[in-house]
Length: 222
Image (tube, rainbow, N blue to C red; front, side, top):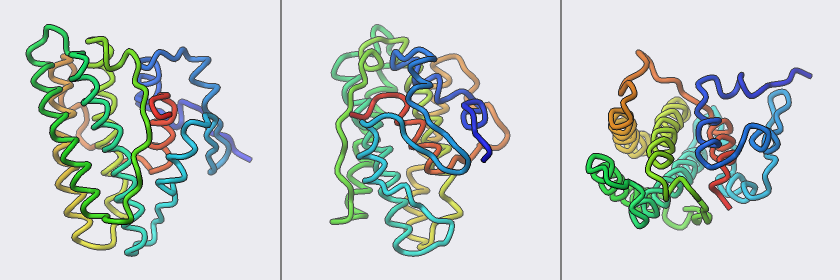
């Protein structure tokens, strides 16, 4: 059986950056990850509920049922971002930076509305929000800025990774109206962090399992 290593999954280092921002050293991070062949096992019990709730079963065969899984997957990520920015703003994690304050307060409002929008689209089929513990990432200015960049970049890759799996044009429009805003967020925080706002000619799509694994490894979800 072939084995995947961390470098193969996390070629751009986003997973490791988020884990470091959460206060995990490399050894602790690796203990949370168990990858073998094409399958994926989550080594952290706190992520099991979210993995089950979002089903982690988005198929490449397009269908109305599959669209529900895609929207709940998007909702999982929006829950995470909404909670992250809400707590960061409450804690004034932006510190004395006017630029970071404007970013944090604006994006907090956007993410809250994204959650409401997706819940409305899903109705009774919407999953419930998990609980989060962001630690230093919502208290320290430098850690907040770094984590925000990782989360926004991850969100762009997540939405892009599902474009080919969507069945209903209305679902595609719903996801598309959020995905473009997430890309604007990513460019905005990259500019604030003095990173290249548009680092690639083409963005890299990532699968549902890769994204959910990355989010689980941050330790943010309880």
